[in-house]
Length: 137
Ligand SMILES: Cc1cc2nc3c(=O)[nH]c(=O)nc-3n(C[C@H](O)[C@H](O)[C@H](O)COP(=O)(O)O)c2cc1C
Image (cartoon, rainbow, N blue to C red):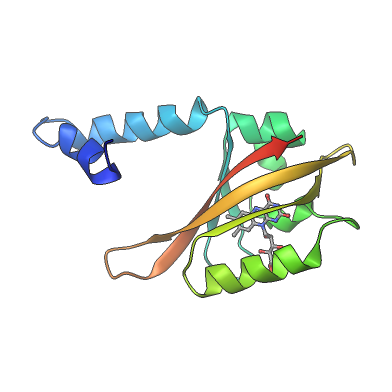
């Protein structure tokens, strides 16, 4: 099985490497069946990107969530213990995986399953978080 590094290596000899990588990333995120959210690593984890699958899953349009915290998906039945562990995991720079009840824009609830990966810059500082989400039935 290919690792991430191998996938980048495939295009390494190509003159328009950066252009291809950009297109590859865009297509992977936009066409994904899973919901994808990217946030800044700063206070409140403001959202800077959501894909189409996020909008289909939650009922929010991209412009309604830009700059907001993913905690807009939470409500009365969201398990605070899962959210506490999430905060702990990402503060420690670890991968988070969990499930909790979330709420769509129309207020309907569903069980969300999601992972969060820290994204580091060249200085190894965490600058962003990437979440992959889906509804579990
Ligand atoms: C990238 C990312 C994605 C997140 N996605 C969800 C989500 O789908 N559902 C959810 O209930 N919380 C999600 N959260 C967690 C909320 O944002 C969380 O409650 C909040 O980060 C805790 O913030 P606090 O420590 O400021 O209270 C996500 C957080 C990050 C960083």
